[in-house]
Amino acid sequence: MWTYERRLQYPVNITKTNAEMAKVIITQFGGPDGELSASQRYLSQRYSNTNRKVAGVLTDIGVSVTKLRMEDRPGK
Image (cartoon, rainbow, N blue to C red):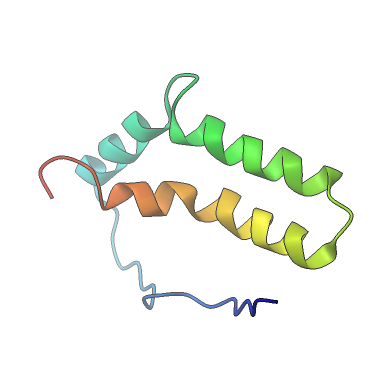
């Protein structure tokens, strides 16, 4: 079996808006192969799954898949 612990990797504290970062995030969402599409696929699988633990994992993956890809963006 496996153990799943749901917690944030880093603390989140947003103090001001950043238009340049918003532009980078928006470019990650576009197209059929974009992160938003991948996220939606994980979330749709979550609702057809009957195992609550697996459904929770799929939900978290669907929500966080974009955050993980932000580390791979060019210029970082």
